[in-house]
Length: 575
Image (tube, rainbow, N blue to C red):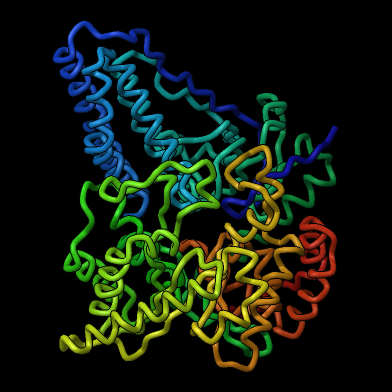
């Protein structure tokens, strides 16, 4: 009998085929105690060298298939093999008498757990990279099977989760879609699924375990659901929808570099979320109007000392240049006590999501913030630069930040540094208190950027990285939409603007609701830019506003999604 399971949309599209469970057998560390630390150290080094050689070979084998962003996944894994913090933890275990297997596994799991606890889903997803490279080394130390062989026919790949190397090891000619019990839209498996152009639904939860091998599945990567054993009429409708989806995707890609205008001529800016120079190049290639969120954490993590001001200037300028003069919104450092930087020790916190993170950390370490702002202002001379502060909760915080920023700017001017002329200062809205009091924050900022990942989890008390409650963390919940509307209402008539940089901005179902609520900029994963632009072109702003007003009166997210599906107009004849 047909039944539907819901998860999170990770890669758009529709696919149908038999389920094939990807079940890995993790290597087991048989030995827990080592005979001699020097011997165990040599064993580990040999295993790391073999793992590095495999990763290099994997990169070369995938060079023609993957973008620089995806190839960088495996370059980063090679660097992780000798990460100083990780190796220091391993060495401490070896000296205490642990075997190479036990020492490596314990250190890897601790490192992965730290990343998984970070507030930013982008960095939470990097925990999969650590476990991936960790398993590779363990296979060489303790033995273990390679990845299971795929069937000789196309399948829907079903798994508890998929690590990056597992994803690319699958034959793309036989992969119709991905469905996972855990994971998230920012995990590398999801990124690679989007690159391969196949649908993916993640965070389905424990109910996925009831799906047997070989059963027929229908996967909707845009709606975020799978149908188990669909009936003949559902199959017929799905086939027609898939043909239409393929046609619309081709149209979107052809018009990627054109402006995103509604049917009544209102332009909406479609920006990209990036976390590296490679991401910025991809954003530019995919037609992004700007960078709506530059995560600067990559400059600070996984190193033993903070970057120098000159290092920061060089990286920021390269990123600004990569966008060819388009605006770049830079988020200041957003880390916290859940993953203290090695050079910025902090006490552990019982609940880091409610602890010292974002601007709370910056206020405790003003020298770090001062250096970052100096580097940004110096690098931004001659470019349209936007700087925003994360995790702002109180008006007192934004007042302090703005005064601190102005002091940095005046000091640089006195030193004779050229400064950006096209400059804006804003804040992220991630906390319900900030949304509800937006009008009181407005005098201190030029724009708001709504981080819907955190805003949703704080509003609904649901951690989107926890499969048990991830389905509740839907940003289209009317409670979240009402908070967004409160922010956009605050800026009406002021000349200031509101953007959305969370995952919701890239959800094609959410696009008309967000622009109807008054959002003027949507910042999405670089590969989503063409489809989001196409989604905007479907709607008139008048119709989107009417839809949004009806959406905020619904009782739950499911009702909002049904509402949008029923109202969705066809793709314009010319994109």
